[in-house]
Image 1 (cartoon, rainbow, N blue to C red):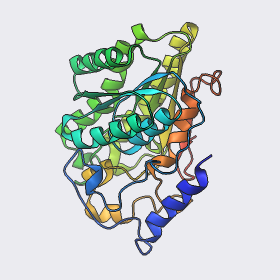
Image 2 (image 1 turned 30 degrees about the horizontal axis):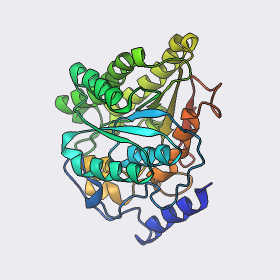
Image 3 (image 1 turned 90 degrees about the vertical axis):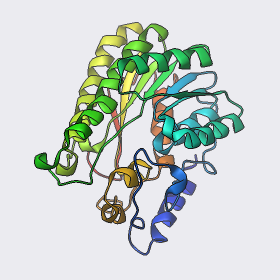
Image 4 (image 1 turned 135 degrees about the vertical axis):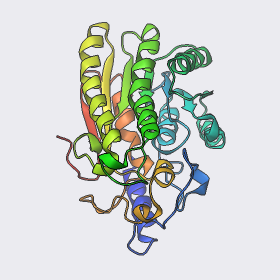
Length: 302
């Protein structure tokens, strides 16, 4: 397994900043990988595949960067073809992720879309299925939050709340519904939840609410789709260094991002990939459904 190299990389990225998580920085949403300091580790040099997903076809939303890129790299090196969903503004990141997937010898399908509308969710599934030939795994990973204004209820901006709800929750429901006719025995859905569902921050009231809803939705869908042989699970990340962080946080908050975890640091996207690979594996996770796997640096998910 590749864990030692991933951990060493993650620790070095933090130690290079003289005790702080990262240098202060901000971007305009949705954010780009190349503008981050330091650039995240997605497993480009550390993930070694073992043919755990050979022949599978997966659609990953938010697949251009961050956790999505790490999952795409791991899936491809494990033998899966991948469709990448992303915002049109993230084209540069999406093309780089597609290059890494193709470098692994797998098919990469680019599906730009703003998932805040039902029509775009349906179109995304259609294009992913057409490009891949079928669909075995749906990874609902796209997400948004905003943490630059006044904290708490008084600081909520209605437009940001609407964007958060539509991106994080509405889109997951719409995508699952659109994907259902293409899924069958042995297929699976993996949702991205968050430690915020268990330990909500007042700076992320709406975001935390959507992630708690995703946990509930995951369990409900597992019960609904289990008789069809479709497994549904979720992964709950802790603080992970992705473009979403400098794009939606104050520069001063980025400096201490993730320092409050028991492991004392934020995680890297590459450290998330294993959970998704496990849940997507038709052999290793054949009896796993309706669960949430926490990858949080020690923060509780119960």
